[in-house]
Length: 278
Image (tube, rainbow, N blue to C red):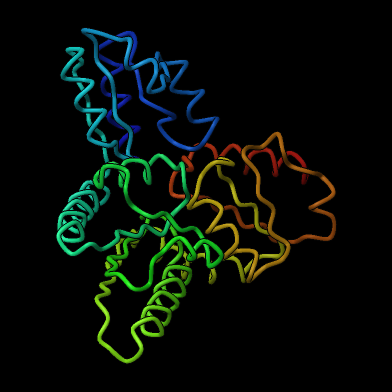
């Protein structure tokens, strides 16, 4: 996420405007700041109508169709896709080719409709099965081979649970015969490793303020991590959402956020808290 923002800032120093396909990060205040510098957010319908211009691809990555559209419309793409996501796209494409030969299935543990998941599913020509929780496992045919992958920002615990259940149900369907099931752990360790650090952090304060955009997948996961340790955790998008009542009888406050939360925004929250406490 930080890399994508740096790319946008660098381009906007050279050009008065820069188009970006979707929100560059899932944080409204950061998007608004970049809009003030000249960033223009577009969607895929807009892209179809555009020609002879520059368009930035955000960290979540894009399906192959986006690149085809860009070539057809003579659009110069500034690709800020996360290298981890690009590597995962390649892994899923290879898995798709293998499963096509074996009449198997590519399964992605992720949020249906999420930008990253759309890009991953694009590597399978839209044939991947997207599962977000245990209830959606019924989409899978457990009698056929499965290759399992994960959206990079999902929780490790959730992925392990899904993986164990798929294996269990495949073994049940196979009635003692070997099952063709391979698990590809594609969760970003910047998110999963952060969970452990946040557990320790959240335990040290009376109150935790978790700063994140409401649409951030890893933000929601990491917020829940803090909540498990410290029930006095509040999810906010910015300083305007602070409630003075939260700080009654509180002697220590911890401020943290998602991987997409800019440092300047957490510092703004800190300044507002200092005003309240005086």
